[in-house]
Image (cartoon, rainbow, N blue to C red; front, top):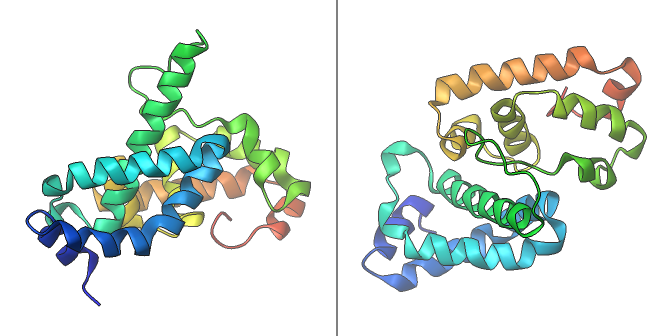
Length: 187
């Protein structure tokens, strides 16, 4: 089995090499999108693969693993989706320094631990956006901190310290009851 990075490099000159990436990563990318935009996830996944294929020549292995690059593409597609939805609804636009405005009102409906959903949602919403995104990429999407760093566009060391800070803030803000319902990824 060829490593993802080799497949992406080959796909720039040999398009068929891209196909195994779709097979390997569609489920994880779809899960990422479903948790953030449930009704549009299928369409967004298609757009992710179109964008990734069109931009496969821009992948730079020195910036991190291919998986992180693919999640970065997904994050950008999701951000454009939310921006278009906000414009269509004449709603407020995300601040210019914000790349993604995750719809946190819906998170508690999708949490497995429904009993602590509101408390966890409030704790996550209280985190700075980059810390929240790093935490969710590592906990929900099972990315490594290095891969998550590539997704949000920060150095790996910075991501690790922000991830540590996010976990500590979340842990400090949750009740003992909520902490007992959560696994090690968040708490």
